[in-house]
Length: 112
Image (tube, rainbow, N blue to C red; front, side):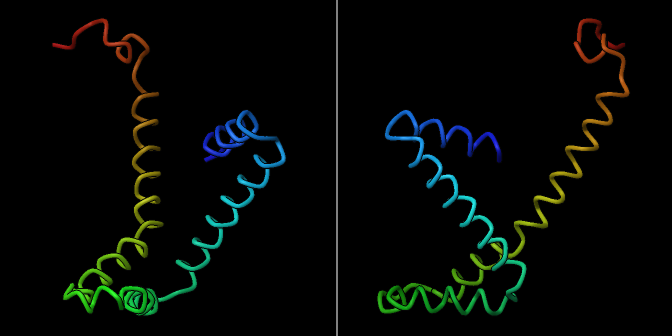
């Protein structure tokens, strides 16, 4: 995520000023940390209730807010688990690639 903050900082610096770039990056970091704290400390039921409360106006339009709130809370709740699985898979891929010789990694010689 460091590259994302760096790009955002230099973009804001180029468009406005370096002070605005620092403020924008600090806001992004704060929002990410707060979102992480909410997902760690809240239960799935609490997150679902929050989404149900936020979708009260949609209920008047006839939307199935319970199903949508449950789906959204599941997505938010399982993001850290999916990131952990992705990191495990990427580590395994790096280990497999580094075990092969360089000529195999380049794909110059076809394997029979």
